[in-house]
Amino acid sequence: MLKQIYIQDFALIDTLELELEDGFTVFTGETGSGKSILIDAISFALGKRADKSFIRRGKEKSTIELTFFLSEQLIELIKPIFDELDLDLETGVLSIRRQIYSDGKSISKINSKNVTMSNLRLIASYLANIHGQNEFNELDEQNHINILDSYIKIKEKQDYITYVNLYKEFIYKKKEYEKLKSEFNKDDNQTKLEIVNHKIEEIESLKLKKGEDEKISSQLEIAEQSEKINNTINGLYQELYSNSSNIMKTLKRYTEEFEELSHLDKKLAAIHEKLNNEYYNLEEIVYDLRDNMGRYEYEDNSKEELENRYNQINYVFSKYAQGYDELMKYLKALKNKVYELENMEIRLKALKQELTQLHEQVQIYSKKLTEIRKDNIPKLEQQIIKELDTLGIGDTAFKIDISYADSFNQKGRDKILFLVSFNKGEEIKPFSKVASGGEISRFMLALKNVISSDFEKTMIFDEIDTGISGLASERVGRKLKNISSKRQVLCITHQAQIASFAKNHIEVYKTEENGSTFTRAEVLDKTGRVKQIAQMMDSRQDSIKALEHAKELVEKNSKN
Image (tube, rainbow, N blue to C red; front, top):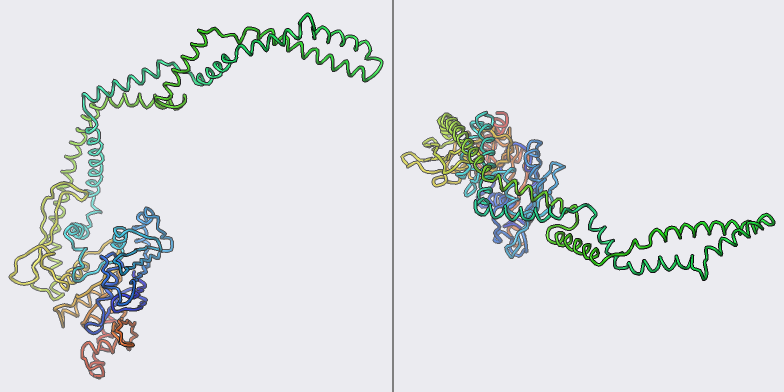
């Protein structure tokens, strides 16, 4: 429900704050007091096109902020939208803030986060509907089928559930088929297949092993330094065993001599131990040198073979994928592509057959939905006419036309159009071409009495009492009160009978201060309500008779 309204520098309003309650609330006041300004402000906040002429004279911007308290049902319904837009909805409070600047630009925020106009309107569509002159989006022709289906409760019917599942499957398969078809060409496919197979052959013929490229790289580095490696090995070996120095022989002799002396002193024994260790270490080195002599010699042809192999591997890496693992992934993808190309024609034929079967099923169940709608249309027509009669539009002719749309959609293949004539003898025409603001409001009131929806938006009525009085006004007031038991209802009215049914009453008036005119609004207590309703019945506010009548009216209608 709409809990708070804050308006700043909008038309004749400088600053206005209103705290609203649930149930039925009326806005009353003299003609020209600014009641419609409130509707314009709310409409602007909910996404109506910005108009800088609404900015109060001398100000740079106008600001409207609406605060809604959301039911658990509504939170569950709009949570996916909020999650997608990354908006916070944890508290169950939704704030819409919209500003328009003197240059014509506007900024919209939901819970302090900027949103686009389309997203603002999307979310606003779940919160409130305004019914009045030029405000009948819920009665747009594309929504007529939703109104009928809501009356039928078609979403609960098994035929509808089956149809929706079939239609979704049909659309999914159709997209898959069209995508595959756009990619398929027999000659092109053969060419693609040859290209892919060539790539596979090029990779597989390499017979690459994991880590082979690194191993060859290391071998080539050794080959580049082979002469130096061999010279170093041979040089050290000669130094250790050469006839001139013969380090090993000398070291062995002194090791044996120190062994003979080691029993004389601990330090001599220690020297012997170290010499002995070094001798055996050097002896191991000599064995290693001897074993590796000639190991690092590369013939020119073997080095060339390594270089060729390394270049082949790098060529494939640079062409297809860097590294063994990535190349294997690429090879797997190529083989999958071969399977796909080889089976594309078969898959196309299978998909076409599936589509044909699904289309037949979609047709069968769409016809079932058509029959359900046709069976229920006369009942809805009769109930709407009956409701309109009680609302003072007794000469109304109302028909619901059903025809086939050009194609299937998620609701079937039916096109629903409301046809109406509000005056006796007039030709019946599409609703949008004949309805005035007051008629729109009363038609919506009739609809809401006949149809209940899964979640209840705030309903705002303007001009609902145009052209009616007396008994019709009383009936309108009673129906508004009835509807308000399920949802919040806000209504601008000039009729005392309608106002007397309200739970909450707000008076809108104009004042002059320092040569400027301002629109104000005040929540009335019980005494204030009686006085306001008395004035609506009799302009002489101090009329005792009017006050007594107003008091009786309020007491009677607040109970009923």
